[in-house]
Image 1 (cartoon, rainbow, N blue to C red):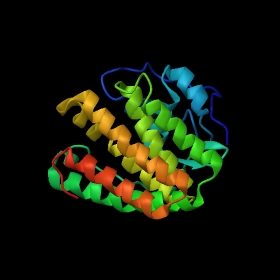
Image 2: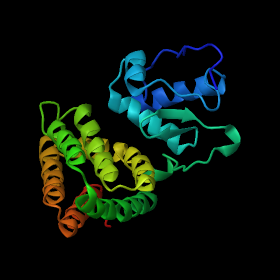
Image 3: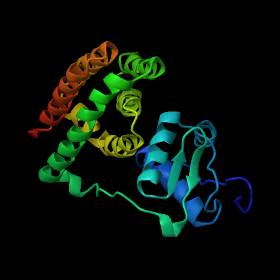
Length: 240
């Protein structure tokens, strides 16, 4: 199906909340208003990044929000398509409820369960191209922008790339959503600890995960991912 007017007319992008959430909200409004109809393909990540004047990582997270809310579905190699309202299903985790330590602990436990296994599978199944994608994310984490929001984007991209290398689309769907939910925790850790020291610790944890993946060592990949998530939780005074 085609949209009614053919071209999107998105509203202005404000800066009063995380950009990916603002982008997701504006796209969702266009869908509700009928700019995009069930079955329509959204503009590509590149096109949306140009429209909103944001990075493709921001667009990717916005699409992940819409996908987790059941508004769109991604088709490999084709893009994101609007889902019919009656078919929409959603996984929802209330942001305010996550402020409670018990709920945040539960989220870390769920993320841990999925990501540890994903790391093991990625070590066994990853292709050279997928390993290169993970290496690219790690390089961005360690680059000149590592202390900025771009460093956080690269961190999240690293975890998504590991999930993709696991070769299980359902893992990618769940982990993309969970990692998206963890952005605020990364920001909180950076604000409450010495920024440079925390970033270097995080980089070292990711490097150990990458080394295990590169070696094809599934046990080491699980162990290093477990240590990273336990460390991330610990920096928020949460024991998992």
